[in-house]
Figure 1 (cartoon, rainbow over the protein chains, first blue to last red):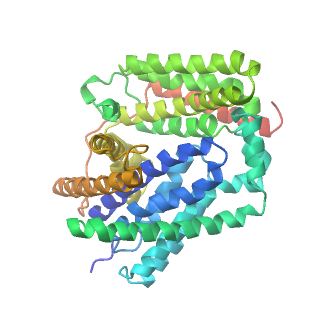
Figure 2: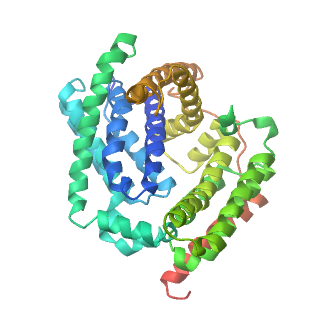
Figure 3: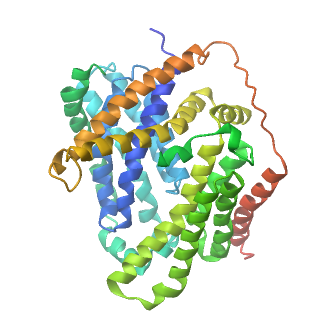
Length: 192
Length: 245
């Protein structure tokens, strides 16, 4: 089999990134309410798991997940979430790529694990909040002091690694959720 | 049809900027308006930058959108300036929240709208190739930007259909709402995607030869003006880092 990415693969990457991003963006609007800010780490990977698992059924070559991951990071940069997500997504995308390859692009459990690792990109959005709290809030000054206080209380420094784990676990839950939907609907409809 | 503003209409788009200029504008808006970098010292410049997308929309014959959003922006600005300091508690929080969302997100969204509605895929591809982006990124990117309006359009149709059957958040079958919206959206997106790749392949995408492109892209006077406006906050940021400002 030809292992180079062809146009069809790249178009698939574009389509699924678009769906993924629209969903992520819609749910990220909840972040305006302080309590939802850390909770996004749970919500986004679970919802995103559905398109991602469907995407994985189209992935048969090395590179597709990495490109999707990079594009997601790039979109975060364009929507003003900072450049950390791009750095994290490059690394997590590469690891996800190796994991799915180790399962020969067929293994279901590896696919769910991949969904977990891929989801770690969202953790990148929080890094600035922990390593440079002043800089983070300087960019959110206009949200008002109450928002800042609420968010500071909600995110003590030890929660940083916790969020990483939470993102990973939620990604796995999202993967399982996506897999259930895949079995229930998509295989029946002949999409997969 | 509310989202048809995102689709490109080549005949009636008025002012044409180079896609590279638009990209620079998009990044600048994301960094300084949405991201709020250097907000304390450079905040006076933000309204100036925010006016750019309104003008661009006006110049590309989107008068209604431009006017409505400009009014909204000014309203939010005035509320933030005069009303918010005199309110307390919940009302303060609500006003502040809405004001911030409008002031930060609206210019960014408008820029995005302008870029999407005034750039054809061919122009975008030509510009990306000029700045030597890999083909592996150009194809997904161009598909993605063309696909956003489709996803949103399909989603709103599905939402309407499901609302008619009582499957909506807050309706009788709220629990099913998510599943019954996501699944049809995925299925139709995959179908559209298959058609899209078939169409692209028949037009020679992914062939071994170098593809040609008839789009004329290049920098004009308007590009220079927009670029100068975009460059200003970066210069300001550099100066403030050096301790001048």
